[in-house]
Length: 398
Length: 172
Image 1: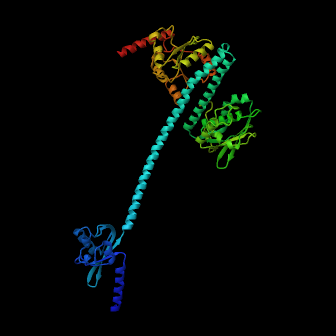
Image 2: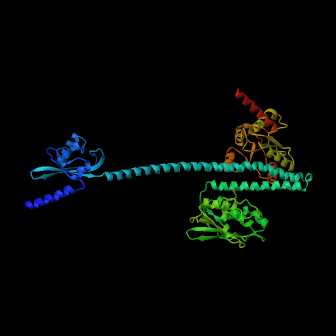
Image 3: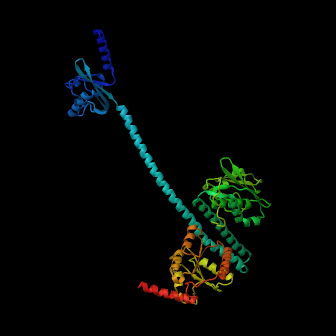
C-alpha cells in the first residue's frame, strides 16, 4: 500500500509529464463525456484556453465530426477499452487545419473510470507524406510521358528510316537513268563520230563518258551501302571456305588484270553470319587489297585465327601501300578516301565492310603502317559444332 | 519452231533508252526486228492491234516483249498481268528490262509470269553485250505459237481480233 508521500511524489511526476509533454493530452469523464483536464501543449496547439476546454465535449472542439460520431466513439471505447484514429483532420480555433493521431484509452481509477486522450500533431509527417506521394505521382506521370515519347519517336524513326531507304533507292535509281543516256551517247560520239570530231572533241566525249561511269559506280555503291544497312539479316552457320571461294571468283577479273597472287590458307571455320553480307564484306576487302598496291603485283594472304571467347578472325593481308595510323579509323567512314587521284574508287567499300560487320554483330579492324602493307581483319562468332547447310552458291544478290 | 527473225517489242517510256537500244540493235546486225511501245497502254494497244497497230504486217505479234517496269499510265507489272489474262497471249515471252534490282520487284515480276528479268546495263558496252546475247538466245530458242492453237503470227493476231471483238461486246 503506497504511503501518502509516495502518492504525492507519483502525482507530481505525473503532473510534470502532463505539463511538459509534446503531445496533447485530454482527460474526459466517461459518464458526462466532458473534458475535465487538458495539458498546456494542447491549449497552445489548438488555440483554446484551459477554460474553453473544460466542460466541453470532444466534438465541440472539432475532435470528432459531430454528436453522432462522438457517441459512436464512446461506445467503441467502452467496448474495446480504447480507440485510435491514425489520421484525423482537425481545425484549430483560428481556422488552421492540422492533422493528428488520436488515441483514447479508458482507465479504472478506484471505483470510477476516466478517459485519457493523446493527441499527436502529425502535420509535418503528413506534409512530407503528401509531398512524397505527389512526387511519386509526378514521377510516374513523367515516366509514362517519357515512355510514350520514346514509343512515338521510335515509330517516327522507323518511318523516317523507311523513307530514307526509299529516298536513297529512288535517287540512285532515277539518277542512273539519265546517266545511262549521257554515258551511252558520249561513247557513241567518241566511237561512231570519231572522224567528224577533232582530237579535242573526242577527248571531251571521253571525259563525259568517264565521268558518267564514275558517277554510275558511285550510285551503285551508294545503293549497296543503303541496301546493306537496311536489309533483313539473320545469322546462321556459314562455311567461310565457300564464301571465300565465292568472293574470289567475284574478284576474278581484277585478280587477273593485276596479276595478283592469292594465298588462301586452309582450314576455314564455320561462323555465325549472313552469307550474302559476308561475301560482300570479303569482296570489298579483296577489292581494297587488289587496288592499293605500290608497284609490284598484289600478294594477298587469307587465313583464319581462333580467338578466345569463341570468335574467329578472318585476316586479309596485302603488300600494298599501307595506311598511316591516324587514318586507320577514318577509312571505314562513307566517302572517306585517302587518295584522290592515284587510285580509283568511290570511298564506300570499307564503309560497306564496317556496316556489314556491324549488321552481323561482328568486328572489323586493321593493322598497318605506310609501306608495310595492311592486314585487315573481321571477327565473327564461331558456329556451334554441326554445320547445318552450306550457303547456296552461284546465287549472287547485289 | 525456230524463228529466223524474232520480233522484239520494246516497251519503255524513256525515249533515250529506246533510241540507244535501236542503235545497239543496228550495231549487232539489224534494227529491223525492233518495235516500240512508249508505255503500258501503248503496249496493250499494240498487242490488241488497236488503231495503227491493226496493220500486222508492220506491227506483227512479237516473239518476245522487253518491258520496263516503271512507266506512266500502266506500269510493266500491270501490262504483264494483262498479258497473262489473255488466252491468245498465254505463251508470250515477256522479259523484264528494268533498272531496279530490288528483290521484291524481281519476285513480283516472276510471280506475275515473267519469263526473264534483265537488269538495264549501266553503260553502252553492257547494253551491246546484253543485246548480242539476247539476239543469239532468241535464235537458239524453240517457240510455240503464243496462244497454243494457232501456228503463225497472222493467226495469232486473228485470235486477238476476235478477243478484241469480245471485249467490245462485253463493254456494251
